[in-house]
Structures are given as C-alpha cells and as structure tokens.
Image (cartoon, rainbow, N blue to C red; front, side, top):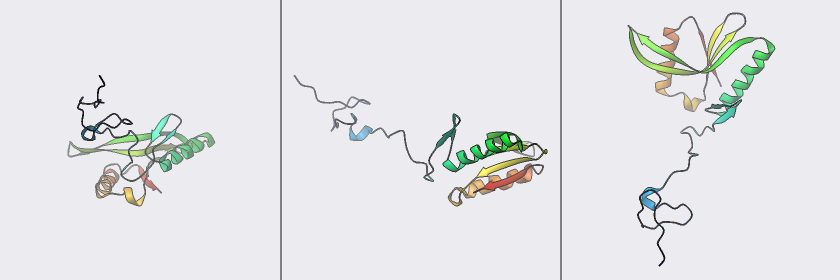
Length: 139
C-alpha cells in the first residue's frame, strides 16, 4: 500500500509537491527574505549589519581606531527619547563614535529610500534631546 505525500506542517494531503513537502496552503517561506529596501545584510568581524554600506563604515571605523583617531565605537547604540519624564520612543543609531580628541558623534548610515517620515521625526527628536553630541548622516 502506497501512501500519498503529506504536508509536514499539518499532515494534509492536498497537492503536496515532492520538492518542498508542503501543500499550497502551508507554504514555508525561505529564510532569505528580502529587506523592504533591498539592502543585503552583511557580516563583518562576526557582527551582522543591515547593509553592505553599514558594514563598510564599520570597517572604516576600525581603520580609524587603528590609526589612533577614534578611541572607541559602538554599533547600534540605543537612545531613550524621554520628554517631560515620559519615554516617547527608542531610537537605535547605527554607530556611536568617540574620538581621541574628546568629540562624541552619532553616525547614521542612510540612503534616500531609508529616510522615512518616522525616521526623520526620530532623528530631529534625538538632535533636540541630545545637543551635546554631533549627529551625522553618512551616505
């Protein structure tokens, strides 16, 4: 007695294809889904970055650190946006950079497509709440 192929997810027997072992109702999407901005995730020194450009700036910051210009840098630094004692939101800036001359900067790696309305509001709010830091957009 031969058995019909069954769906791995639900066990149903509706048109299960032999190559993916799932029926049309329970298709499993591949793990490599595209980013909404078509950015390709990149790994540099074991850390995953949202885009190739962001990983390139991580490399540049390492070179600046080796040359002695940068004391330290931290990827994905989270800022709490607190207004009148109430936390409005959190904002993860791509890089926090501390220079050897004492300057401290936040670097945001952006393309025109990623400069959304919500991002612009958070960016302006961060600049207003943290005036002691320089905020730079890297293209």
